[in-house]
Length: 69
Image (cartoon, rainbow, N blue to C red):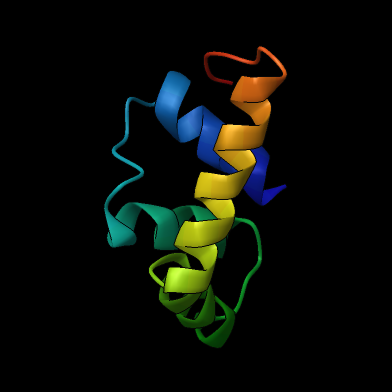
């Protein structure tokens, strides 16, 4: 549900999902608690998650993936 709300923010509502307040709003609408939202925001800036995103992106490119969504 959160992914759906986030994608809508990008494509239908023209919201900036790079802003923590925008992500927090979508997360609240999806039913996450304030604590869960803070944890997700904290994790999103962690080196572990950044490395995972980089590795996943590199693997996708090797398979010929491109674009978003």
